[in-house]
Image (cartoon, rainbow over all chains, first blue to last red):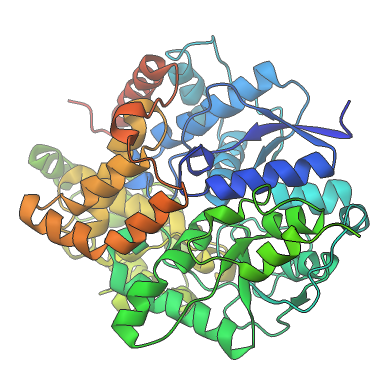
Amino acid sequence: MARKEYSFYPGCSSERLTSASNYMVSVEAMCKKLDVKLNEIPDWNCCGASIGYAEGGELPRHVMNARNLAISEQVNKGQDVVATCAACWLGAKETKDRLAEDSDLLAETNEALREAGMNLQYKGEQEVRHMVEVLIEDLGYDELKKPVVKSLEGIKFAGYVGCQTNRPFGIAGESFENPKYLDRLVEIVGGEPVEKYDQKVTCCGGALAFSEPEKSQAQIKKIIESAYDHGAEMIVTPCPVCQMNVEVYQGQINKRYGTKFNIPVTYYSQLMAVAYGGSAKDAGLNGQIIRAHRLEEIAAKPVR
Amino acid sequence: MGDINTAMTEQYRNDFLKEVEANVEEGQWVKMCMQCGVCSGSCPLGPAWEHPPQEIFMMIRAGRRDEVLKSESMWMCTSCYNCIVRCPRELPITHIMHGLANYAHRLGLAPKMNPTRRFAKMFWKNLTKSGRVNEIELSVGLYFMDGFKTGVARAWAMKDIGLGMLKTRRLNPFGFVTHKGCKDKKGIQKMLKKAQEIEDRRKGFAA
């Protein structure tokens, strides 16, 4: 039996052949080493993400999240719900909070839920948590350090926390303006965090990277520029939207602004998967459009 | 939709604040704004807002209904939640902006060509079709939303990104056909239909 078990909400971007499939691969490798078991919520659906509100409104959005939570209550009894995606976590947690404080909304949600299969009823029994919370609060930094067999020594990382893992809920004990946990995770695997990364919690534009590309790319430019200015070799983030936006638009930003950006953008779980002795494939490094060569080299070395 | 707009205008007469409190998500908080402007100064896309949140709050109280609901402003929200965590009165500003945008959209007053409104609409349609987002359909749909010719130009401009995603196996080229989504698609759609009915009834949108 695994040390810890959770009811897992992977989210749309974690599926095979989707934008954050490499995140998922590395999370699996990381959790295996940490002896953490993730029990996927059967037939989970989309959380509505951050722009679902426009067409989806209020109740339909909450009903979508409540369906996942209700299935989880029914199938993965007694477990906390864990999401790896910032938007999934936020959406689900927001629904839980809102339904806890509004009994009318809760009754309406359950009325709608009855229309779906599986005879669902949302009770609000389980906590909704982010993977980072599980790592820090349930396992703790010391436990996270134990499986480290390779050091990422000599690599300087700009820890880009972004928005939705940080606001409005954030990680307990961390400040909204300068959260430190990502830097701590970098230190645990032997890397060097950029101490004064001033764009740590700047918004990448989120979904507006699609609809307002110029405005979003101006944001992304600041995030990357500051990483370079502080001597970072790579950016690391806990959020799939941040990862994608900051990585894939570098070519377009270079064209627009005459910059020469080419900086890898990785997930915390990829650093941990490599430090825990996983191969480049285990860490999903083949999913980087801008290859993280230094990490690949470390992953290729035999464990001493 | 025009009829609903007329009905709402008649029902609330000149009291736009009351209308917002009744029909907009978290609208009951609007009157609590003390006009400090921290939200406007904290917004990453602040300069792009015709009327930043602080102004929107004052305009609601001043009954400037059309100017608020027809504004592009709320559609600039990136959902970064900076305004929420910094507001000294702890107003759920992000949700109010979302709520206003949704309300304006429901009334048919939101700017027709606003790209975020159009993308959001496409996004919701995409995710509710199968219960999960189909990324290839979403991105191709976005490029081609203004017709074939512009679509080809947009897709060409994005080709390096698309190829990068394909090569790294982060995009499914066959997703149009192979995307499965949820097993209980029908149930999810029935559930959403019901939720919409309930919400429409509560907010006075029902016929």
